Image (cartoon, rainbow, N blue to C red; front, side, top):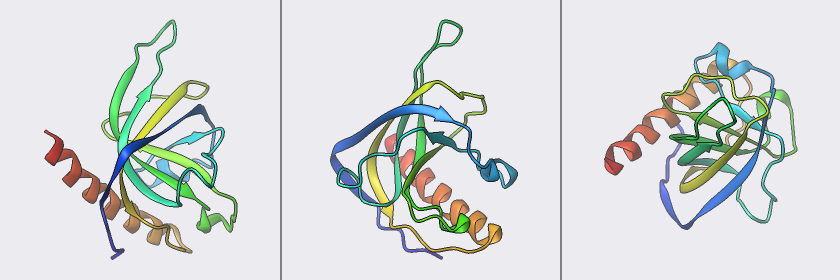
Length: 141
């Protein structure tokens, strides 16, 4: 199991971008993510997994919604990437939001990235992150 550090961030870090299509691997293993069109600057955020709140900015047809989320900033090692990307898993959310603006407000750093090589490893890692995030969610209620 990965080490989870859960360190509060003060003030919380904020990043906004449009949601774009990704590889769609997350949805095949139960973790659909929203991929941001532009990642934060490397000097603004250290690579890793974060917990926070995501606000999906409403359109003329939709309302603005805020939900708990996990965010990942870093290379997607499973695809052999070395460039940092930014994507979020939004708890209790199942809508297509491609092209919409999303703001992630990151309140807790959970762990650094891990170099994984298989989808099974990715799924296990995400399950662990989701449970760690659930603990933070329960403390906020």
